Length: 115
Length: 112
Image (cartoon, rainbow over all chains, first blue to last red):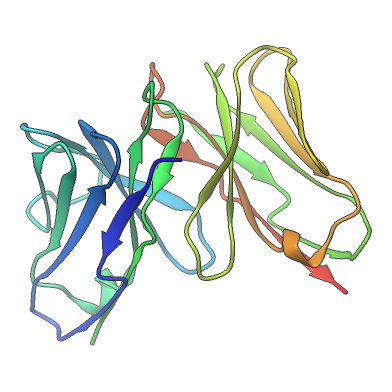
């Protein structure tokens, strides 16, 4: 099946710093990628839809200036958590739709810990 | 907006017992998907159901899509320790197929 690569897998940073997370589709082109956030023992919450060559679409309650998304190519989307604070600590997972934009293939996730 | 509700939240079973998780949507779905997330891992696609009343099987797993295309279930026969994880159902967020909105998941623990 399709492969989505995400890194880094774990980041520990100081409060106030910015963190960039990369998501790559390795064997297919993804015009659309999705960023989810998952708190411990919780479900996946959609943060934003990343569209290649255009602005991302953010879900209600997600600050676009806080979570910068760039989708400059058909195989790469990045999420930058700007001026991270402890409340931003979470598991961030990217995904891309394979084939006919149906099932999602997920990256391995990034565990962000902000001290 | 569309909501996907899933029960139970947790389920503890003895190895060999059966397990079922249920999913309900507030709206009719064009399709429903099931994912499994192992502890510490990421969600992995299991199956997609599209047709009303559809039933699909994968070895010990049986997936059903309701006649009204608003509910679904996943049943595992004779659970094994390898079945441990959280099972999520997910439906299209809006018209079309993506993105998906996920249920809260059912966390399955299997006691050997």
